[in-house]
Length: 215
Image 1 (cartoon, one colour):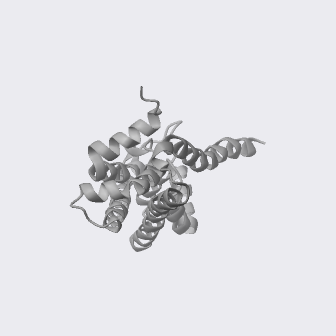
Image 2 (cartoon, rainbow, N blue to C red; image 1 turned 90 degrees about the vertical axis):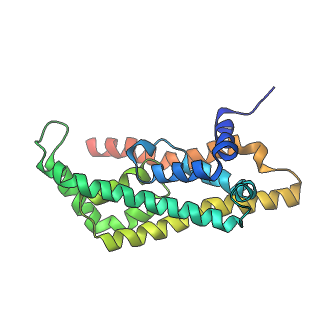
């Protein structure tokens, strides 16, 4: 009888069935395509770090650093795709007729926000679920400076992917050597903890941010 949880089964299915290719697709989608906001990017990257040996062997038996570099590139390209999409649809939004849901002033506020905080937003968005999907699209809509966007996109991708995958890789090696058991048997718990840590700040901001504005 298989006692593995749904999250662990899902992550292991990706690792063993799609391997690197599915991992790259998921990261690309989550960092730039609207449909990718629900993917578990952080926990998947950490799990991929734990499974770097298997991933490397499945991809021409390369060094695990090559896998990390490829995932970083997928994150960079995902954000570039999101920025391009926002850049192309932006003019249509500005010309769109206002209604109860859409107000042009929202775009103006977003533009002003990115003018002031755009650098930090693009960088930190990598570490925040949901936000990392929409941040590059909004940056494109409000015509954020391309050079600035690309610089912080690259920097954020390196830090996000590198910290998650190297964290998983070295923690797995340390636990295996010191305690003699594998983190692969605890992917479910690890994934849930990472999801909670990364999503709670976003949920807190959404819920309590609104309540503070209504006071």
